[in-house]
Amino acid sequence: MRSIWKGAISFGLVTIPVKLYSATEEKDVSFHQVRRSDGSRIKYKRVAAVDGEEVAYGDIAKGYELPGGETVVLTDDDFKDLPLTTSKAIDVLQFVPLEEVDPIYFAKSYYLEPEKSGTKPYVLLREALEQSDKVAIVKVALRNRESLATLRVRDGVFVLETMLWPDEVRTPDFAFLDEDVEVRPQELAMASSLIETLSGDFDPAQYSDSYREALQAVIDAKVEGREVVQPEGAQPTSGTVVDLMAALRASVEAAKKGQAGGGSAPAKKAPAKRAAAAKKAPAKKAPAKKAAAKAPAKKAAARKSA
Image (cartoon, rainbow, N blue to C red; front, side, top):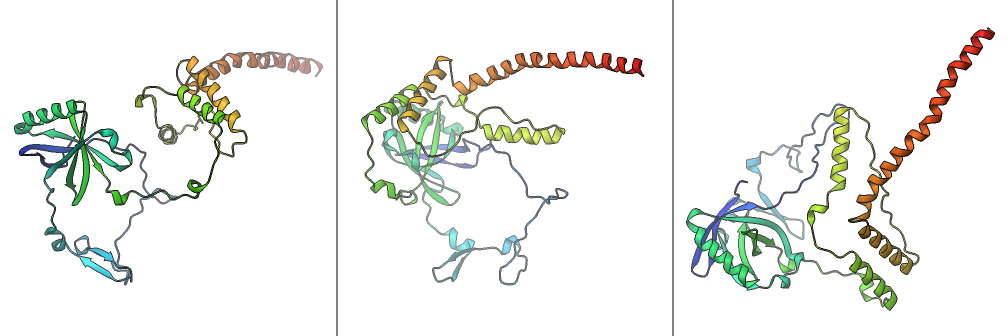
């Protein structure tokens, strides 16, 4: 990994020099826009809307549009004197229990590695934070933007989770919240039973991006000139639930069957279907061989009569 930022954790009078790394990476199949006929790449030019002339990158500035449609142009000189007190520091503001921080505020995760001179205070703060069962609320500036963040420990390393500001979280304003929806005790009990049946320890390794895998299979098939084989399994459908109790009861029974089989039911049943189909295949092909064997006899009879 390559560090993308250098600064220091400011904890009271203690300063811990650290380097920042991206802790996550989104894996997706990336595409380019191309011409359909020959696959030639499509390129774009930066042009001015007024006269259509191409604009060099060095001549581009930031513009803030006013409600009336006018534009205020801001240059690099306008930004350089803005106060960013946390531009090279991670200022610890407070320590709070993690469960008090709503996950909706979390934006992006980073790892913090100590510089050689800051290893001991880094480990000291790490041990103290782990024993407290709390996370640190900090303020940091990354890419000319000041953010609130949390500092916690994962696998012996500090993880910096940048957060949204309170005014960046939208308030849900939906009509159904004002409706008086009646939920029967039997329905609630059945839903609770389904939750209990599907409860377990979180293991992210058991999940995978099936869409990305299928898309990669399509690309690989095109590269190799093969026919794309669609995976087996029923696709989820959406629609109106006619009988909620019946749907919940069936869901509970399906979940129990899946657990009795050891693991998730779809993952276990798919190979069994393929194996059953493989066993049945020879039985179906046997009549075809007999028919093929009889064919020469008919032809021979036809030749004799001729």
